[in-house]
Image (tube, rainbow, N blue to C red; front, side, top):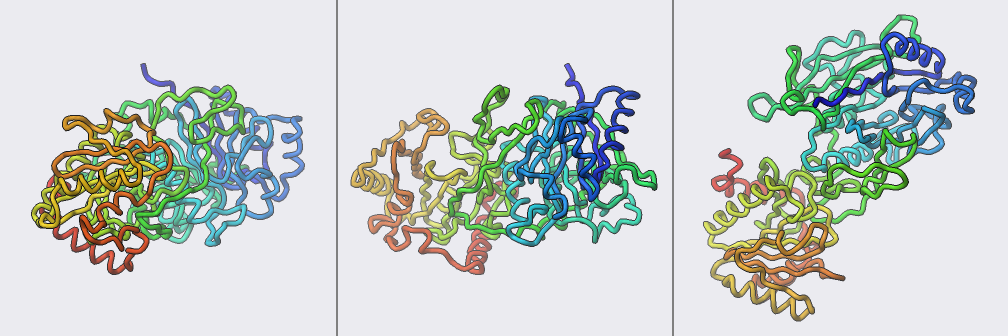
Length: 537
């Protein structure tokens, strides 16, 4: 049975003209029937808002349908938003917050970013910065199987939105708008993106979110800029549409391409906004993100860790933990040091380790956000296995065997460390013995997993553990119950008994300059090419 579409109204700059807006909404509903919500972008309040607003704030008047608005775009209207994290301002009028995702049991997902672009850090209360955009992107893109959001709300236009498209009239889209909003739209792939501030109406041709003949077809995006309420030029400021949440659509129907679809206008400019970099070996403790539930009382927040309160609805699908902020390993994140990446598959990628034990010390990482091997979906496991086999064959051609280990403890994104050991340096039994011996010395119980067993058979998702896999297929496992030495795997391999490099046990003592790292990555990429299955598929 097909899902029932939601009927939505989107509005441009209200600028305090509440009676004009809500009068128009009532007229539309009287003629066309009930709408589920009203989404407002641009300036909701203006310099003459106070008198009209007082009646709504006091409860003397009420918005006719649930209305969701963005925050201030200038210092003058900041006072209308007492809580920067969002909440109910008046009955049926909710301020979404500075940035985040608004979602409900209907499945509709609305990403939002309040304010105008700022180069300052931290950004003023009426602006957003590159850091705000990066954290919003990471909180969403790290979701496994992320396909996009249903709706994106911003006040500024995205820069270059007119590329490949129909004319935007008097607006020069190469100069107008925000590059950060362009980057956000390119990453989040909204089915509808609404913006305002330019006092005009512009509905861009739909654009693709995939490269034809190179990528699997994806849904298209539609950008709509709306004029200001009550403008004398009679430009469109209200936009009505029906939408079935992406999560409830037939996949084939979702990716249908309309005849007027164009290329993606943002592809060339995305890298310009990726400014914040962080090492591939660091651990982060970023701030918590919040999501909202459309079916709850307006203004109530649902923590993104899934611990719901009050009368909230239970989750329909349990997903792997999401990062609470920027993740240095989710490939879509601007935090990743891209110059260390040496191979990219469909679900995983390969990167040189920052401060590697050896120049060819590499990491196998899932592209999406997964905390450990036991959390991986079947298709990701399959590609991890391919990378393992390719690396084993590659290192064998260099006269080396590889040792793989994972520490699912004090880390939020899976990192499979792969370290080569010269064949003439030690045997696999020597390596196994060194791990067991040093574990015993530190009172760590390191057990051998039966030959034909898998780690997913001995540990549940969410359980901290340390895991070693030798090139013979032998596996060693330790369930972490309290504290665990973070550098244990490196310390064992760096010891005199194995690689004889005890001074390199701590990655922080091994960090090289960016140019040297880039050169090492380039050399590895060239040498690994004949074994890289991603180049043959």
